Image 1 (cartoon, helix red, strand yellow):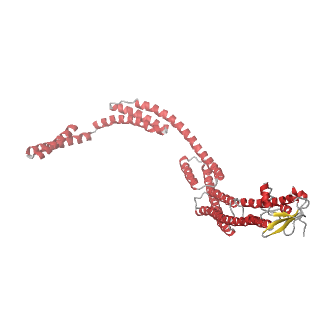
Image 2: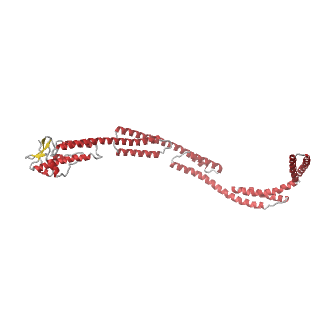
Image 3: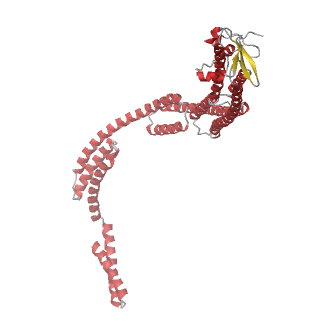
Length: 462
């Protein structure tokens, strides 16, 4: 049997105990044994009171040769040797080791209350403690220690059940959260259309993917099959979006290329017209080109800007030349206006005319003025009506005198006037006879009214 003798130094340092017997590790070996779990990660150093030590020492005895025994059930068993020391020292050492082991159980009991403890840690710690309390090399109430361990096993089993239920809830919650991410991605796919903002939707997919990664890092692991199924749905949605975006980009590129070609053709036509001096016709053509430009679509921002600069340069060249021509024409028209206003003064100075001789003389002078007027040319549009009206007024006043003189000298007009007068006189005589013979007041009044009208006509021509 291996030597389980305790040297004198162990009275102050239990860690230096001799190697344990095969059936039960020595307190020193127990103290040195490494453990993986948090509850047994290090040797428990607890300050024990004398009362606690005395209460446990009563469960042991020391033989004359230093062999230490502990009551275990109905009998006793050897737990070690402590030669060259008093019985009190030997019992105190092994009682202290009992209390240390008891403290380990208490430490694990507290550890079970932690939210961070895992099922694996519980199982590993229980396995280690089970070895520790199975025939331990200590002096103390062994049945109480083992009962404490048995109670701890029950508490651990309940804690494992609680952890399992909590994990089940956490997994369900994690599945629901990850499913929500998947459903958001699938909703984005279902809403794709010609009006989709692809950049914004790509940002949303990127955000959902980051949420997915963050969720994987920070939440409980879910069942692999379920996780794979959810990832397959999410990945499928991303793939569908990327394919749709590529298809849209290809169609957009084709449209832009078509727009670029159409605008190149428009530019070529504009450049062929930029030197034209057919102002009206070419202006209409440029308006048509502008309408076609708007209908051609976009060729991309950078490309559009360059194309527009070329088109605008051709248009500016033509319209700039047209404006220069207009400016020159307006200047000439302003000069013509001054000249015609001078002629107007001469024409208006011919008035008034009262006799046929004055009218004839004024007509000759006005004819010369009108000939000069026509030779001068155009005036500003806004002044045309004003000056033409003034010249027409002079012509009308001269013509009125000419017409009056002509009427007086026209023998046919006098003959027509005399014949009409004779007719009126005959009609008046007839009306007088009818009025005298008429007895009906209404008919008589009507005849008198007709007579009055014809008398007015007769007075007008006499």
